[in-house]
Image 1 (tube, helix red, strand yellow):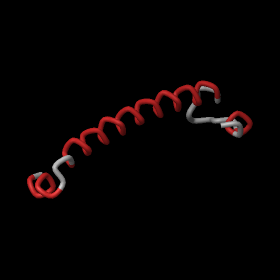
Image 2 (tube, helix red, strand yellow):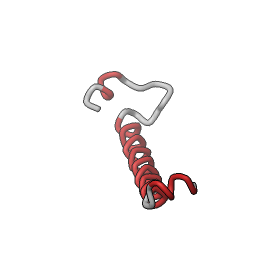
Image 3 (cartoon, helix red, strand yellow):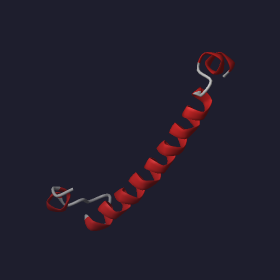
Image 4 (cartoon, one colour):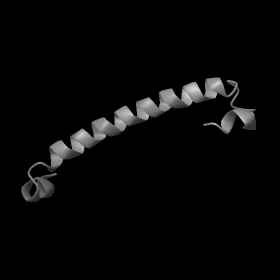
Length: 55
């Protein structure tokens, strides 16, 4: 990214940090979704509304 690096010298590092944070957030959200699915009955084909409401 030469044009960006010339204009904003820290751009590559900032984008790299953002990528790392987004990857971590994706992992955490996947873990949370797995837990929510387990609480909702562990059957993605049939999710009871009463168990989804508190989520």
